[in-house]
Image (tube, rainbow, N blue to C red; front, side, top):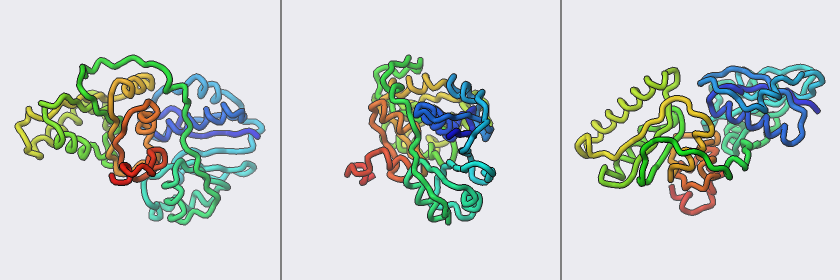
Length: 295
């Protein structure tokens, strides 16, 4: 068996992270795999050396094709077993007609049980396998350099993700401002960016949003709210891992997640997490825990 894996290997997105991790996971398992890149969106980031090596491999003799991108971009390729790997953040996607494209393939992969149920509810008839996003466990055993953030001895809540409606960062910030004041020894670190904006413009945009949240909440004077540190734009994966180790509690109030990669990594780094009890994250965040079920 030889596999051609087509996915967004150079994007700075969750789709890209999953595509790279899955391709590398198949290679580790001894699968003969050749990688091909497709651009979806997001910042361009350099993939690992292994992905670059797999990208140079010939596709001659391939028997399977894995298409890992949005369903409406997928197409049946004759002479291969066609596998589609996709993610969604909804209870169903019937209005999108994704099911039409997915039903033309031979087999489908999703990363979580929630995505499985969404696909079935949308009329997908082809066999579906739940394939959680692979990870390299050695990542979580290494020591990474701390970022120069000025956290000091404060308890650091932190969030990693783009600034979009689905991620619900205003809700997170409001909850933080309602729980603490500047007198408390805490800080909120937000690693985020606004799609299509430069790091400088993202910093300005996010700061303006935070200022407006303070004004609209009217709980205290503008200078009484607890501090927020913004990290705009791209930072390396090693810096992301350093952020996990440096901070104390990961928090994400996003309205839906196919998996929640930063939340998974935070738990793998042995950090407590605050997550909504819905979506892919419920698969790895111990939904059997009675505390989690009450959230």
